[in-house]
Length: 249
Image (cartoon, rainbow, N blue to C red):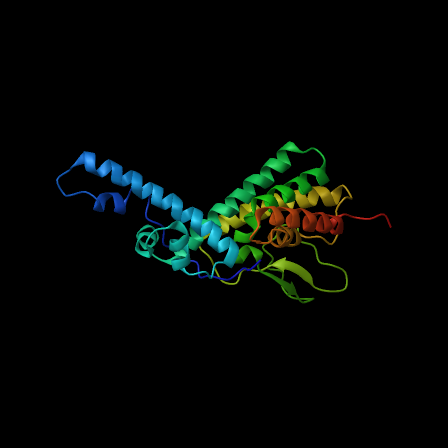
């Protein structure tokens, strides 16, 4: 998996059916001509978003917009009409994937009574969806806090490990409020899954929320063959889950 940093812009994408649909008119209020063009614009947007998820998932967020356009089978100008800059497209994809992971974590938390079953269900669902390859850099970035360093961790319930530093999530740079809100929601619900499993004695006491997110990111390799990729992900996740479980002393 390849995760590359990207600047996060506060700009927003042009809304579906917005500037493109308006520009398509002939200036005479010709309704019958405008409606089909809005449908085409919406279809192009869906193609671009699907292509962006595939390209960024395979190559990281550093992949050029030309690759996205080529995969979507549209001109690069069409991509830029929908997303004025690459930062806007990256942000849109990252927000969608962060939201998807948050929903998966909430579903596992609400539908599984056993703490370990809830955590493992979340991990298996998330890895199978491939969402880990598209998490934003400010959520995946980790660092080691030296002993005595002020705790600025973004991960709730993070615990300092005996005799050393603490593995924690660290934002590379300030991000927009809405980016923070999405990341905070994900970290909060995953934190609850982690705390439940830890309190039940089923999760190693040194495992943090950042460890769980890294499992999701690394257990979804991008391979050219879909069957091979699914098998590799399942095998790798089984190994990682064994490493997360607590063992009798």
